[in-house]
Image 1 (cartoon, rainbow, N blue to C red):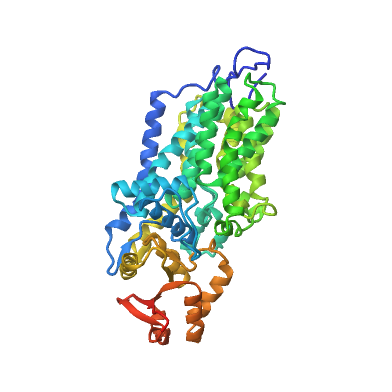
Image 2 (tube, rainbow, N blue to C red):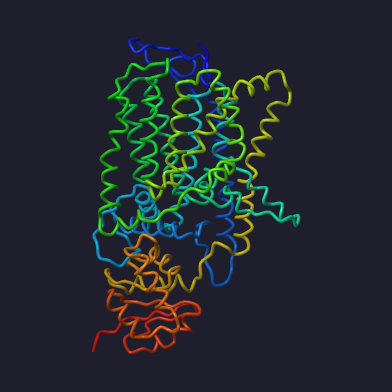
Length: 556
């Protein structure tokens, strides 16, 4: 019986004596040295390309500013950096620095823990340590995707196509460049330009948080397929540990891979290819994840402080917009599905199908999970693999006896990466013109608070400043992120506090009632809140051209 995606696969009944193979025998065809040379060169090129904006940001100089070390100045990234700093100062478990309520350190996150320890050992800033991990996990993702492709394709060409398409590909966002020719086009229709959930290249450039977890997930998929091939318990254990490591960085990804593996166990029952391992052993990676899943349920659903983190979340965009945003992969998917239906899908391909279905379904379950769209990070790689499984034969036939076939394929992969190239170009231009920088006066003020505040002191500032502050100091802020306790109430109170028409009686009640020790004023706030600066219940303790810091005075 023919198989799509895995040449020479052998069907072994459940009563057989040999484990199932995927490509050219009992396991995936080994990766040759020439393949490793390609993978190393491709990974290095990708690392250099995505590092260009960071290098330019560090090299250029603008008076009164310093390079922030990140290209994504979002509230999320600042929150991550705050935990990296906690780790760098010696913590192994984290507290929430974005809310003022007293609580003990109970939050474990492997990603931020490792980043912080790297920062401590090499004396790096949190953002620099995050950049180091970005490059390390970029290499890990390239290796893991290539290894995954070896279970699906015997052809070296197909493995390379799969790796480049997954790791460097993009959607149709580059079409937005048409505005340079004075043609109006709504760029909001191109999610691959702005939405961090879709393409790995976006993570490789800007969002290390997604990159870390996804690299571990793909590695876990490889170990699981290796386990299905060998039947050895240690490979199932390695798969489970990879799942757990990903979950210790991003619980969403662990929940996804648990669902995908469970679905695969069900679907594989109906596949003619059988494995000799018992269902209990094959489900071991799922059971390994249960304790940490229980821990995160307690943390984000029951803990009095951290449970506020899971309340926020947005639904997925319209299905048509999300589908189109995946670019060429989505438009080739129906063709691939038609071909796969004609020729029974391979065993490893069935695993990719399980991953794809699980990711799509979970991403649209906002009615059950407030954070459902976080699962969208897991859609692209199995989608690309399924597409290539379906069109593998036409590609191989096209490359036979055609002199320019490989050049054409290289050009198509390059065209599929236009959005990725555009994102790098945009970041380079912005870095060269002074974006991604922080006011040096504010950074100096943050350092002053860090040096003079007591461990339990709380600082009040506007939301943007409060969100930035914890990555520089070990103290908590009144409200710096959407995961703060009673965030809606606090944000409303902060807006009223910084309203020039607010009374100082209200401000004093807010400060004393919430144990706030420092008030930080920036920009126009220094002028607009002059009455607060001269109020008897506070005292000015620090001033520079960017910031004024007020300290609460004892009740007389």
